Image: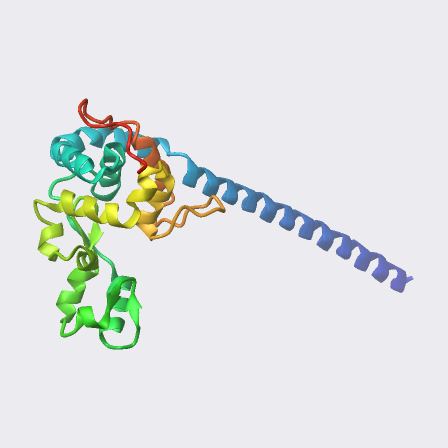
Length: 239
């Protein structure tokens, strides 16, 4: 009799354990669904608070940069609305734009200088010969309205003080023209925003790899806020 009771108790425990496991798996499934859904929403749609902030900051960006961006857009055959939107993402339209140090870039550039790494993008040991840690720190810091990394000045053949100075818009636009200008002239703006932030086109998976998942959707949305001045060519040449 006692054995039967023990067996019945064991069966009940198994049923309870299975029930709990089902509830746990269901809860995990719901959480995973909500998480993936939020990630998708957050990387494809602008949140209301970001939209409000971007709209509020647009007037400052126009006051601070409109004329310079207008001239650079014409000079390099780039999209004015994209450039204005980009500097909103990178410096919030503020002047001076400020700077941002990137520790991981600093580490990799030091490895290149010290012969522990062959290169970092287009930077080789030859470019960094004799460079102090302070100099490399400047190269590992982003500067100017478009927040170009300091080492980008090597491609432009200018000094860091140039990309963070009064000609920052022009030098930044030139770098954009050299690196992904053709993509812009073909209207591939999602690729352009993603390349500026990560160095790579927008992933085919549909999920961006930017430091901020709102980066691309905010950029695309803000382009609608910045209309090109009347005498700026609105259609870009595909030549």
